Image 1 (cartoon, one colour):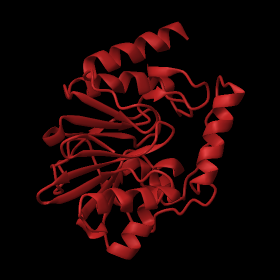
Image 2 (image 1 turned 90 degrees about the horizontal axis):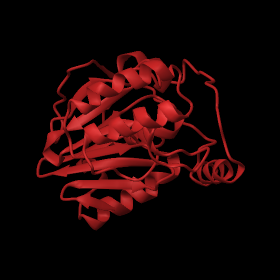
Image 3 (image 1 turned 180 degrees about the vertical axis):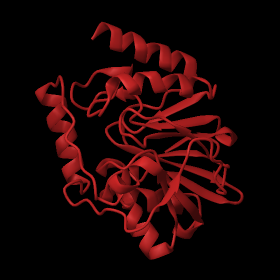
Image 4 (image 1 turned 120 degrees about the horizontal axis):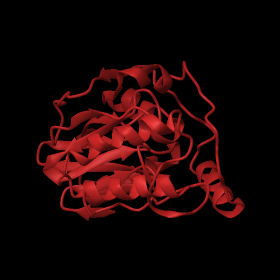
Length: 239
């Protein structure tokens, strides 16, 4: 689904990843779930571009619902996969955590689990190779993605700022649809390792001043970073 010229979403409000399309090729941010492979191929086909138009995959963190089909693209197309240095082991399946689920409602939780199951979420394929990145790195990929450290949800979570499409991709740094409660609007994401650090990190997102704030779960937000971050803090204070 095209959000704006050069900016496309793959997936749904439950789980999503993003494609940035330029004249020099495409950059993929996150890789959703394994079953999103067909959705990616269909989106590229609608643009008249092959899979190898993708020059690189940038993961916002190493959780299973973000690495999805990344290893398949890396293995079959030779596309490099970039991830925050502190999440490299997580993306390779060498480190696993079990953060608290927190509040939930049965209906939304079952919809999330059902969707994840239908999209192959029970057959995670971890990465064999990754390229670690650090805060401040500007990657040699279409759109020149800039890495901003966003520790909290996981130690190596990052935001990916691509000025060419006026967007910052935040993974689970925040959510606009809580997959366990169904609540909508900018708010802290569930399954977060360190909720306090995650909130503190958001000021770094606000500093990008991007119009689009694109999470891994929930509707795309196009009201600017400052307002998105303000609403997350407000939601955290009222919970």
